[in-house]
Image 1: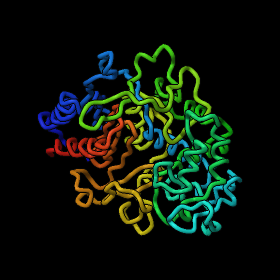
Image 2 (image 1 turned 135 degrees about the vertical axis):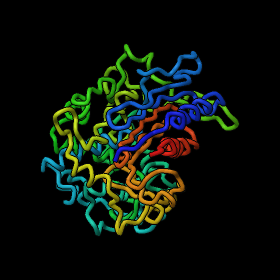
Image 3 (image 1 turned 45 degrees about the vertical axis):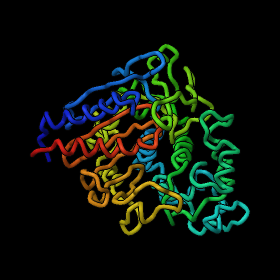
Image 4 (image 1 turned 90 degrees about the horizontal axis):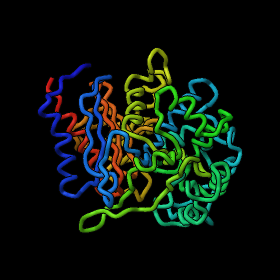
Length: 398
């Protein structure tokens, strides 16, 4: 369904974000909004490097962080629809190291107090974040401490993806697969699964199957040395105001790191990432071919949580974000109830975000899609994700 946008109301989007830049809340950002294939807003503001006063430009390179996850998920779904990957069978069919992964008996996460898996881990669990895996910051317990100690799936760590995933398989799951939702390293394991099933390293698969067809020439697991000047400095918000540079994940220069992190290791630009988003918004179509089928994407962007519950009802303990009105599909968060979400958006909108504050959303019903990139770690990042959806939807007048 086509909708009409009021230009004056649409200008509220960049005005709001640029006001935040002027107030020192954000270093800088890049933003692109499309209605179908038409670009209705393409803007950037602020600085990519505060210390050198370098502006954000259209070709600024950002760390994608967890905005890598939907790309890796699509890679797995491509193998799924080709018949090469069965997302229902035990993961050990492809990754034997997960055949006997134990499970913590209680929510305390004690790696010495475990029971066997009663429901075999599968690729479906990885795609939906119901695997029982976690992150090192997802609650302080023995399992998450082991993640930290062994630098599991750390792009800056000494191990490659295969070795790190094997080490991860030897640690207990936090809960039985399928019994709860927990944001986790599931998609890093999924990246390893893509490697095993396709017979290609993850970076080569993504380059050949996704980045090449979409013309995403500035997206990859490393930044070319000639392009380092375009890379946005990664900042963290300082209590009381301001930002300071934060050293995390590289950057990898010219060659990818030892570990190809399908859950958070990519670099990208606003133009590149919006090309990926537009492909999804078009139902998988790129020119005269289908990168992924529209039925596959409809399946992936449907809430897969048992009984249609939302994340607030199904999340593992310790998750403090407000997850009401959100479901989860195969790699995407899905709005199931806008009033419960308390955001002016639409049912069926699917999206994701990253540690650096970037986000995208697709509203297939209205034909609207948007990508927003910035480079700051802040407790307010989720505010901007919600504000982007709200401000774009308030511009609809017909």
